[in-house]
Every structure is written in structure tokens, then in C-alpha cells.
Length: 138
Image (tube, rainbow, N blue to C red):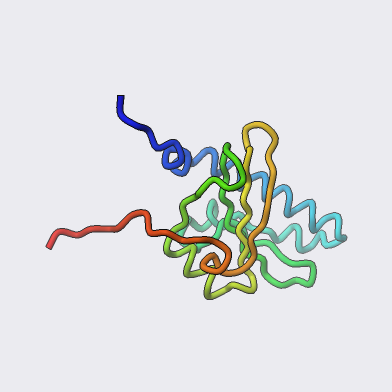
């Protein structure tokens, strides 16, 4: 029986990722609503679902001062320190827009979801290790 890479299988699970994004959408909406910022809460966008996955983040939310909050959501059923995959574009956007960029890490998602946030450039907040390459025959 071949070895299975459960982290890779989970990373490719669109439904797990979508459920995590939906939970963060609710969290962000409630955060701004409770701060009395209903107009900002109503402007939150699930950009990965509406515009596609090419922007480098999943959710466009707002800080309480109205500044953009760009959220990339990474969801796992496993523990907080479980490695996750990020795209080259996600890393690039996190560098260029580091003052606005936040990675929301949801973990223990199946049991009782928990969250931590890494703000700024992913190259500053994470150890990045190349995991795959695109190859084109010569």
C-alpha cells in the first residue's frame, strides 16, 4: 500500500478550504458589526469565490479605521503547527501589501475550530520551503 501524504490531500480539499473561508467571513462580519461598523461589515468580499483564486488572498475585509485587511485563509483538521501550502502569488502579495495582509490559520477544524493570525509578509512570519516546481520540457 503506497504512503499517503495526508497534508497534501487536505491541502487540495476545496470543501475544507471553503468551509474555513466561510467561517472567517462570519468572524470578520461579526467583528466589524460589534465595533459598530455595519457599513464596513456589509462591504466584506469573499474575493476568491467572486473573482477567483488569483488575487493572493481570499477575503477583502477592513480594519476598524477603514483600511483594507487582505485575508488569506489556511484551514486544517490537524494542529496549529501543521505545515500548509502557499502559492508564489500569495507570498508575493503578502510582501507587496504587507501592511494590509493577514494569514488566518484555522486548525482543529473538525473538532472545535481555533484561529491564530500572522500579520504581514509570509516571508517574515513563516519558514518558506520550496515544495514543487513547474517544469516545461526543453
